[in-house]
Image (cartoon, rainbow, N blue to C red; front, side):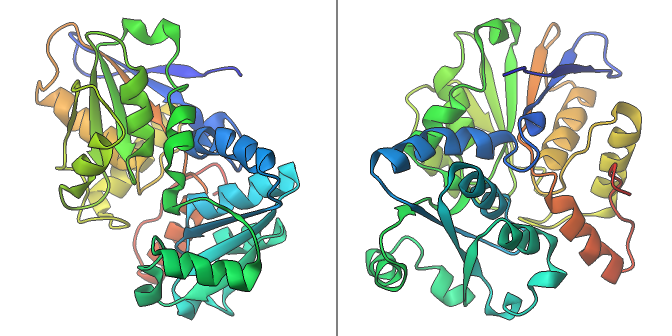
Length: 301
C-alpha cells in the first residue's frame, strides 16, 4: 500500500507540518474505516458469518464503508440507522443512497431506541429479526479495529515529534498511541463535547504519551461555523486536499491555530493523520444550501 505524505507550508520556520493522506486508501472505504475493517472482515470470515451489521447516523462514514466492504467481500450488510424520519427519504441522502446501491439493508430506529445499541437485549432482538450476523459497533471501534489502526504509523515515522489525529469514538487514536515511538507525543482533537472520550481511550492503551485538545469542536459533533468553512475552503484551494467538516477539518484548524500560538516547541515535526470522511461533505453541503450558507468546496463542485 502506497502511503502519501505531503508537506504543508506554514508561517513558522521553527516547525514542520506534514499530512498523511489516509483518505486516499480507497474511494469509499477511506482512511480509518479501511484500517478498522481490515481485521474485522478476516474475523467475520473465520467465524463463517455471511452478514455484517453496524450502526450509524444519516451521513455516517461507517455505514458507507461497511456497505462498500460488504459488497467487495461478498457479505450481506445491514445498517441500523439513527432517526426514523430518514425512512422513505433515502434518495435525498447521498450516503444512504450509495450504501443502498451497494446492497445494504436498513432498519430505521428512533433516537431513543438507538441509544440501546450496546444493550445485549437489543442485539438479541436484532438477531431474532435478521438472523446471525457479525457485529461492528458504531464508528467501527473494537479491539480488532484498533489493531488495524496500529498500522497507520510505519517505521519511517519515528522522525516525527508529534502525531495528530481527530477523534470520534477513540479507536483510531488508540491504535496510533499503541504504535507510537519513544519520545513522540500523540495529540487528539475530539469532535464531540465532553471529556468522556479520555476514559474510552484509556481502556485501549497503556502508554501515557498522549493528550487531548478539546478547544476545536466548534460547538459539538456535526456543528460547523463560517470560520471553519472558510478555513477548509482556503486549505483546499492552496493544497488541493479536501478536509471533511466533522473530523479532519477541525483537527487541521486546531493544528494551524496552535502553531501560530507557539504551542509546539522549536524543532517540532508534526504528522497530521487525514482519516478520510470526505463522502460526508456532500450531505453537509445540502444542509448548508438549505440554510443559505457558504458551502464546502470539493473537486465535485
